[in-house]
Each structure stands twice: as structure tokens, then as C-alpha cells.
Length: 128
Image (tube, rainbow, N blue to C red; front, side, top):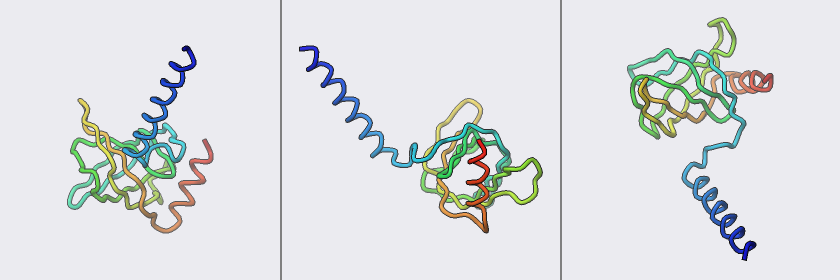
């Protein structure tokens, strides 16, 4: 009888994980590094200067006052060095947002990088 309950719990947990993967396929492909670095976000006519909550090789989480819609494309400049020289530039797609009391958190997935940005971001993340 105990084995049956355990199997039911395991089955439900596995089904729940599969549902989450289907609903949020962009989650957890890469290690997310909880790191605070300066990021500039550009959307059409607006730009924002803010900080990251986390960064991975697949995307970035940041917070701005306005809400961006999932599917919207933006341009990001990630300042991985202390100086403002040569930031990593990437075109991104917003994949989620979460409204909080201080603004709106966004998750954005990298679509492509300018120049050698992907290699520089990878080298920087490997240093953690």
C-alpha cells in the first residue's frame, strides 16, 4: 500500500514537471547566474538603464518600470566589465513578465548577438 502512494506522488510530480516544461520551454536550459550588472534595454522609441537579476547563455532577467509584452523584440546592451566600454549587444525576445511593487521583471531570451558578443558572454559566465 505504501508503494502505491509513493508511485502516485512520483507520477504526479513527473507530470507536473512535464507540464511546466511544455508551458515554459525556455526555463532552465542553462545555469542562471544570479549577478547584478548594468544593462541598457531599448524598445522602439524608449530606452531604460537598469540592472540584471540573473544572466545565462540563453537569456537575462531585468526589471524596468514599464511592462513589455511576451513576444516583443528588444535590444540589450550588457555591461559585463566595470567600464562602459564594449558592452555585449544582443537582440532578444521577451518571454515573460511579472509585475512587482517596484516595476516589472522581464525574462528575455537571446536571439542573436552582435560581433563577438556570444563568445565574450560565454567567457564571462564561465568565470563564475
